[in-house]
Image (cartoon, rainbow, N blue to C red):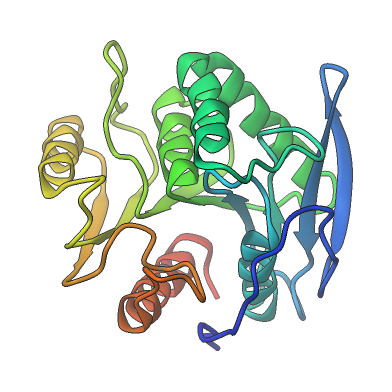
Length: 246
């Protein structure tokens, strides 16, 4: 069953648990606050959800709940730290900038979140992310450090590969959902990524949605594009089915 159309009012932390529950965890003594939603019925696998530059908010909670309804365990990670949910644009840039400058920390936090998720769902996994979370998803894909990953998916995420990094031939399949009208992540970035993945021999699929701007999946925002959101979620649903079964 595919569920994609939800009305959502964005809110800041603290999170309000919906179908799942808030999960407090620590990484090297730092406190983080994620969200997990167990699959309805028998689990088909685990989906790790990486937030955009707002940090973990009710948007990722809603997506995790949608995945739960589809029969997947879902865990929405926290890469900023408990209670750190920037509101101003400058603060959001500062938080993402810290992680872009320290990619080892970015990878460490994602892997720690994955380990936390697997405490209650030790299943084959797909990692997905939105905007900044999409870039973080690809950072993990290039690292090759995560075991048991069956696929990676990015929605209107950053696609550039940092100098000195590359994709290994055994990288699991990658799904890219991109807005054709995105002026932040351009079609030149899309083309360059496809060349990299072709050269490396990594299986991938790139979906481009005409007229869709950056952040086209964010409910109730001025950039939300219902058709592109529905089509990209359908593509992701197919990707999950082929990667995890069910």
